Amino acid sequence: MAFDDTEIEIKLAASEVDFERVQSALAATASLKSETDQSDHYFVPKNSSYLTERYPYEWLSVRDRGAKATVNYKHFYPEGAEHHSHCDELDVPIGDVGRMIQLLERAGFELVVTVRKRRQMYAVADDFEVSLDVVDDLGHFIEIEAIRDQGGVEKTREAVITYATSLGLSIQAVDPRGYPYQMLRQKGLVG
Image (cartoon, rainbow, N blue to C red):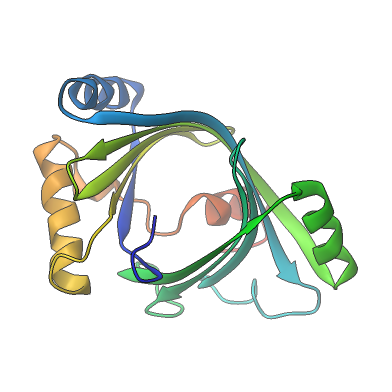
């Protein structure tokens, strides 16, 4: 959930033991907002430079969240860097995932990867959303996202990191690129 079209989050790879430990802590201290199966279909314009970057910094996806579906665009900063601080995020609701996928393909976009996950999302006060993801072919992840500005990008990012460490998570486990990049790397399409 981006605020003012800006997303500030960290995603951490987790062992099953750490995943279950954080899940228990959240069950005692946060509110479970949802539990869903999700599919994100990532597209690139045919003959584009999206994937020629060592670290792609733009993603266009069609997101199927069960009761909610959107077209999502993200632009990460700094561009082309392995680690990013934040991204612009635009989300537009759609009514029919299959038709949107057809529209993009007919408009010259190519489906390059689909990420499927089981997500539990928790609300932590009015500060963070914490998502516990089990991602097909990738494993367990914990995503912590700021849901309000806490004094600009850097201070908000620091607050996210501080909260992660309060959960006993190691910042060394931060995944700097995200699920689509990892899936594309498995396919040999990037880095």
